[in-house]
Every structure is written in structure tokens, then in C-alpha cells.
Amino acid sequence: MVRHQPLQVYEKQLCLSCLTGIYGCRWKRYQRSHDSTTKWECLWTLVLIITFSLLLIWSYFWLEAHNDYNQFNWILYNRSGEWSDGTVPILASTAAGFTYITFLLILALGHVAVGQQLNLHWLHKIGVTAALLTTIIGFISISQLWGGEWDIIPLSLQATGPFLQMGAVAAATALAWLVSAQVARAERTRTQALLVLLYLAALLTLYLLPLHISSPCLMERKRLPLPPAIIGQRGAPMLAPENTLMSFHKALQHRVVGLEADVTISLDGVPFLMRDRTLARTTDVATVFPERRFEDASMFNWTDLRALNAGRWFLKEDPFWSVQALSRGDRVRAGNQTVCSLEEVLRLAASSNVSVLFRLRRPPPDHPHHHSWVNDTLEAVLHSGIRQEQVMWTPDWDRQAVREAARGFQQTSEKKRPLKELQENGIVRLYLRYNQASSQEVREFSGANLSLTLSSVNDPWLFSVLWCSGVSSVSSDAPHLLRKVPYPLWLMSPDEYAAVWIIADLLSFAVVIGIFVFQKWRLSGMQRYNPEQIMLSAAVRRSSRDVNIMKEKLIFSEVSNGMGGADELSGYEENGYDYYTNQGIGQ
Image 1 (tube, rainbow, N blue to C red):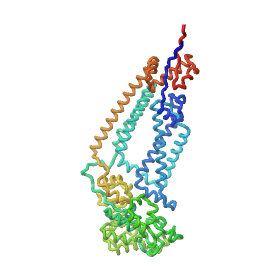
Image 2 (tube, rainbow, N blue to C red; image 1 turned 45 degrees about the vertical axis):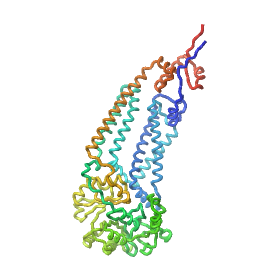
Image 3 (cartoon, rainbow, N blue to C red; image 1 turned 30 degrees about the vertical axis):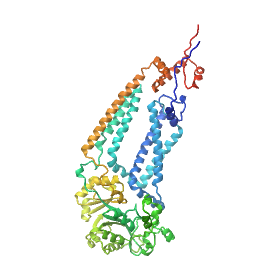
Image 4 (spheres, helix red, strand yellow; image 1 turned 60 degrees about the horizontal axis):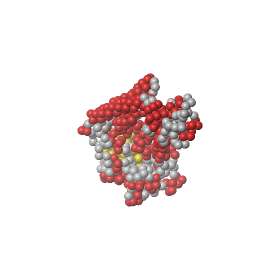
């Protein structure tokens, strides 16, 4: 009588099947392999890592650029002539691409963890290539269209750098499990040494990264300066149509210290508020004067301008996604706004005792007030009744004549020049974009008694960094949000940060050493299995990935030596296991 003793019992490996199936469409056991990954597939793994890295930077950029989404949409409007929120498709495609590439990278790491050969499916290769090319095109397009915005990355690292470093250390510590397993499985001592050295070099770099991290929020709490004063940029354009009386009233309700407006001159010499060159975006000129839709705003007389509605566009376009949060009364009021004159804003500022900062745009050459634009504006300011000390005068044109006519004006420059030159020209305030002044320059300006206002500060993290830097005032589209920031988002003394940094690095290193020791012990024990131990393990149905690998090698080595045949093995594959037969001949 012949008795068959099963040697290998194949258990269902659902997770492994999903891992290799989703990554490389290798759902069957015979399609999988523990052989070394080919050079071609290693190249695709490198492409996957590069794509992930670029998408990570791209995603971080758009996350931090939230402060300037409205500016980006305004740039797109000036190029296309149509207003739309261009950030929506960018954010949606970025989220989809980053999720997809991250998922593939996790699957690739899973292959490394279980010792499976990497074999990316051709459809995924197309997807990775498309994601890589799209991201590169995105980098190039943003550099050409919005190149100055890249400054947001080094600036934001002043707020996020310490936390990103700790997150990177945690990720590198977790990767120790994969690296140690690869080191233990490597057959050559040279390969083991190379893997360990590369990993330790990367880990050491992350450990020492805080030596190069600087942030104004790393300071003693007692040295924290006063919070920056807030100026309403075009009023409060998130709560009401920009450059309208309602917008400025909303800004005053949130206790701003100043109002900022964009000013141009009408055909009959009346200074009025308008950011764009045309009236198409913020008024109903297309309905009232359809043939003049794209005509320069300064070519309209004040009577025609006053007849336009300057609020309904806000309710329709919802540029800041904030209309739904407005009350019913505010929506009605916003829909009835008209074009605002400079005189109205000046009177409002005078009655509220706040400052006014306006940016004056010169009319085109064929405009009747092309040469008198500064005098016309100056005359409107002097006749409005506002105190001269409340006016921040920015135009450089005829500045000396303006200084003689209105000695009380706060002479404000929109250009960063040497301190000596600024003082010689009587400049007492600088008005710059938030990325045009470093923390060191802020201290230099403050030491020279030169006030500094940084514009387009809308997000709390940016407000916190500038607060710690000692900036005296900021101009914002979101005064209602910045007023809700009673303290910097984080503040830590250098000694506290050093303690956290050192403790985190020591804990990480201890965990890494422990993982390497454990992996060496675990895998070295697996390498001491002999055929008798394998048969015993199979009999009691104890399975591990490394034991199963050795079982398979033993089976196929004996099959190739003639101890079993394919026909003999195939009959048992239907039952979920393979084996070779111990045959005996009865006497």
C-alpha cells in the first residue's frame, strides 16, 4: 500500500495576491517570483520615486500658496479676460495624482518588505509617465506665469520646518524595517555595507537638519513683539465686494487700523476705486454699456460709473467661496453696491480715525488728466477733510511737490531701496509684498525708525511668522480671520526646541538599532531551517513567508532531480496545495 504524505500546504495569501495583483497584475501564485528585480524594473522604481518627490513638492507648494489663490485667479483673468477659479482643477488633479503615485509607492515598498520581485504593470507605467510629465509641465508653467510665488516655500518652512523634520525622521525610522530586512537577506558583505552606509547617511542628515532650520518663532516668549496692525486691503473683500463702501465698513467692524484702496481717475477728473484696468469683472458694464465692456475704466465719466452696479458680480462669482456664509441682509446689501469714489473712503476713514493707503494708477496717454493725475488726486485728498497724518502717500511721481503741499502725509514707498536713499527722500514707511523683506531686513528697518507694511497676508501661519519677525503692520484681504489669531500659531524657545530635537533623534536611533538587531535575529533563524524542520512545519501547518520560500525551493529542486513529476503534483493543486510523494513498495 502506498501512502502519500503532503509536504507543502499552500494557504491562501489574499494580501500578497492583492499586493502583486494591483501593482503588476500578478494575481496567481505561479506569476510571482522571489528573484532579484531586473534593472529595467529598478529604473521604473526610480522613476516612481522621482515622480512622488516632485508631486510632494508640488502639493506642498499649492497647500502653502492658499494665501494667494485670489491673486492667481486675478492673473488668469488678466490673461484670458474671463474670471474663473483656476485653483479648483489644479487642486483636484494634484490630489488625484499624488494619491495615485503614493499608493503605487506603498505597494512597491510592500514588495520589498515581503521579498517579491518588482514588476510594475504597463498601465501603471503609463500613469506614472503621465503624472511625471504633467507635474514637470506644471512647474514650468507656474515659473513663467507666477514665478514670484515660489518664494512661499522657503518662507513657509519657517513655520513648518521643525515639524517637517520630525515627520521625516519618523518616516526614516519606519523605513529601518525594510532596510534591515534587505541587509539581512543580502548575500554579499559589500552590498550589506553599502545599504547600511547609505541609510545611516540619510538618517544622519535628517538628524542634523535642525542646525540649518531658522524660524523667527524660535524665540523667548518674553521677547515676542506686539502683533502687527491690520490694514483692510480693498476693505474686507471676503465679506463684501472689493473697493466698495460695504467692504470698508466690514473691515472697520473688525477693528482695522487702516484702509487700502486702488485708485484711478475718471474722464472728468474724479478719483474712484477700481483694481482692474477695465470694468468688466467687477461691474455690470457688459449690460449697461455692452459696446464699452473692454474699454479702460478711466475713460468713463463719473456719472456713467455711478450708474453701474458693483456688487452683483460678487454674489455670482463668489471669488473667495464665502457668499454662503453671509446673512440674507448682507447679500442684499452686497448686490446693491455701486462704484465708490476716493472722497467717500477718505470721509469714512476720517470719521473712523483710521489711516488710508491708496495705490494710484495713471490714466492712459489719451486721457485728459494724464498729466494732472497726481494733482487731481492730491486735491481730492486735501478737500476731503481727513487729517494729513492719516494718509499714506505711495506715488513716486512728483513726490517732492506733494511733500511741500502736504507735509503731514506719511510718505510711503512701494520699492525697496537702500536705507540712506529712503531717508533722503523723506520716506517714513515701506509698503512691500510679504516675500520682499527678510527677518533681518525687518529688524534693520525697525532700527532705522522706518515703518514696514507687508501686503497680501491672509493666512494665520503667515501672519504668525511676520508677527514673530517684528513686522509693524500687514495689509490683508481677510482681516476677520487675522483678528481671530490672538497668539502666534506656535512659539518655542531655542532651548525647548533643542531638547525636543535631541530627544526625538535619540529615540529614533534607539528604535533603528532595535529594528536592525531584531531583523537580523529573525531572518538568521529562518536561514537555519533544514528539510526535516520544513516537513515538520508543514505537518503542523505553521507558515511563514521565509519558510514557504524554502519549501518551494525544496519541492522544485527534488522534482527536477526526479523525485516527483508534474502529473503527480497537478492533481493536488485543485485542492489548494502541492506536495511531492514518499513512495514505498509493499513486499
